[in-house]
Image (tube, rainbow, N blue to C red):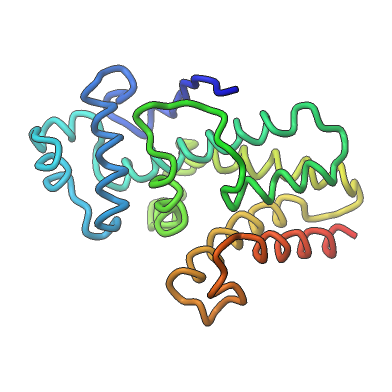
Length: 223
């Protein structure tokens, strides 16, 4: 079963809500394509506008700058991930099975159950692996945080930490473990593709080894 989803984003992330017009949706769609192809450093609104056959001014009517746009699409991703986690764990009572879902979700092994026609999830996943931390490794992170721009990421971490606490209520660092797990999963996937000597999964064709590694970390830590 696939469910259509409309994700409401923090207004601080945009000048004009891109979900309210076809042009806005096209800007989000093409920005994902462009960032995935070029990388965030080489990505510009000028290149985006040219690829869309529109004007640079049109893009600026929706987003203040490319960093806001990156934070918008990464925040959309974290919200989508939380929805997926809710979907797959809603009928589960066993914390161990919920942990299995968390790990499989973080390495993108689970079938997407949510529809969003203008979002290419596979390309967005690649952006998350390679570019997501650039949304908060900035000099203005405290200002952005006060505007609640990272709430979707925090919400996902909090939901995962609740699963860890249900498994072991006495564990003292569930939020730290949750954020570490997310970052580790995505860093290892990045290293596997680009810096394989930093992993034990350099020649792996699947995520099986990474899944085992992440579950090993969780089980040994929580026990």
